[in-house]
Length: 268
Image (cartoon, rainbow, N blue to C red; front, side, top):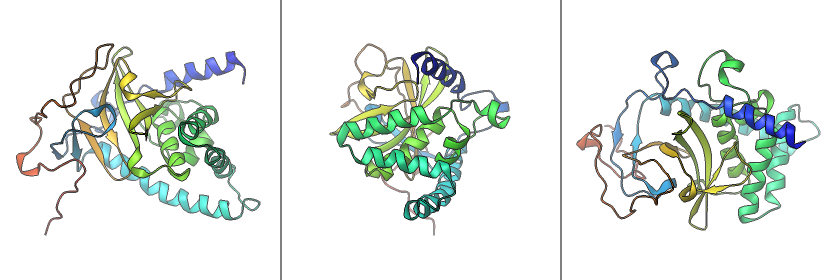
């Protein structure tokens, strides 16, 4: 791809990535208030305290994506077992990306997937593609139709998992871009104790501690959705003291306080 074509693609990606999660009410209730619980000192990307969400629009949207992923995993397994008979070009393309990443180790493996997904996906906004705001797509749909930042992040999340990265070392992070005044999503992978962000806006991976002018708002793992609490804007100043005490958000119900990595007790 020529430098000018890639530059235009990145520009289109920027335009396609103004997420609707904090938009006007007409955009939906993705971040409608839901049950949240206090969080402990966090081991999540950015090292900020988090609160687990047990309901609400964002959790529902992530659960819908996961149900579609179940179907796509079956399709990928079938194509992996019989590539000559595979009827899905997107599945073959996804498998080829994962295969290339498996040939590498450590940071090179993460970088291979970041680069390959960035180049494979056509940047397009949800409004242009679906006629509505904030539609989350599964990886094979994204490779087929194109997508915006959260679609890139989901595709990378799944590709990294299939390439052998442990679920505990993978996240999707939603951040507020304080310069552009919009929201942005990236995949994040932990390597040697450090979180690296895989961003569709750049080929180079950036450690969370080096990201500037973004405020992390939510983080997703394989099973849960968490909200960052009282997070500062990440600027040239150093991050807040990781040993600082954790304050409870006023939205948290005291009866529901549990650690972020502990599932709530099931109702009788």
